[in-house]
Image 1: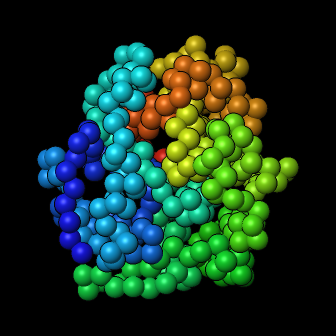
Image 2: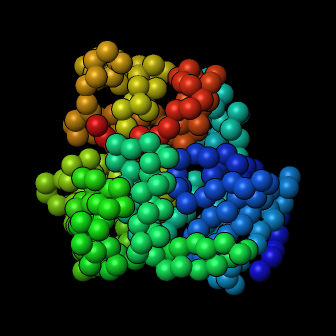
Length: 319
């Protein structure tokens, strides 16, 4: 199936797919190939037009518009977060980067695996569980695999999950999959509730009173931001907290800033996370998640506000 979409609001396919939100897209020449919603979506941008090919009628123009949130005008959103020189420069440089509306189960499972791992490793782990537990399909003469549903991963032996290179994450993924499979979480309810309520639901109903190691506030914020339209969510890990500490010292309490120096090698506690989260959301407002997206893009570029190397990879764990 081939189709084109006219872009009526700023959009950069490259920046959006390079922004650390998704892990099952790969660039091949001028095209991006994405394994999404049980099929394959192939896309490239030609100025103000998005040219697409897909393996299924279900992955048509309506799906693409929803997935990339193309019906939303991001200009007023970006204007609302451009409160200072740092974020304004990031927005100008990476203009058109958008939040993606992912499949909620896949997003949750992916960020459970993403704790304390860089992007290449995250992609490898996800690829392994899809190859082993997902359904195989063909597109353009190549073999691909769908993302396995929670029932598949819930019934998988932990030993087999570990064989996919998940390490200590294997029992965590199985526990989350089992909870979702048994109805412990209603994704639709997450969308209907406000940010604070939906976040509390994730942290208590799914993860339990004793949060899984490395799985908690950060994963909850990723799921809410990248799949549930909670644009005020601001996922925080150590490196982005360091960027905030450098560029926005008034946002980060002094005792937390001391922990974030490279020589300190300290870990963010859940309490630290909550303090930084509240401060940064007060500063950037209801679209704080967009600010996080642009600050990340700027920080990983060689001349971004954080002066990070171009090879920086997102490491989504709290610690």
